[in-house]
Amino acid sequence: HGTKPAPLDDSDVKRILKQMKMEAPKVKVSFTAGERVKVVDGPFTDFIGVVDTINAERGKVRVLVSFFGRETPVEVGFDQVKKL
Image (tube, rainbow, N blue to C red; front, side):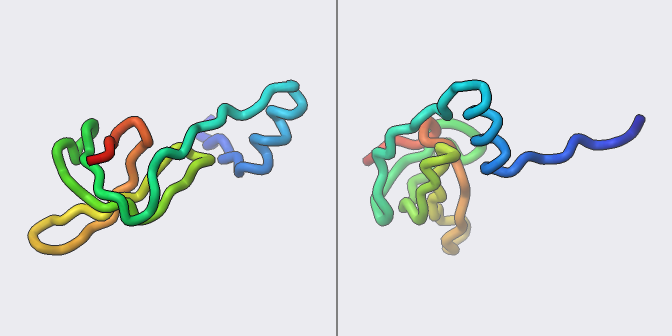
């Protein structure tokens, strides 16, 4: 009662998937660092930004968007951004 589940790290997840004879889904990386993109879903919808880093394993991309004249990094899923 009242205990929180322990988070799994990537190596644990991969080991479990291997034991289940399954493969982690592969996400095609179609973005490159420095590329201009538009956020199309989520709280940053319609913001334009520049791809900073790409995490293919998690299907996430960090985009630098401008807030009040300052660049702010936001992490969104590959499906939440599109190339300009």
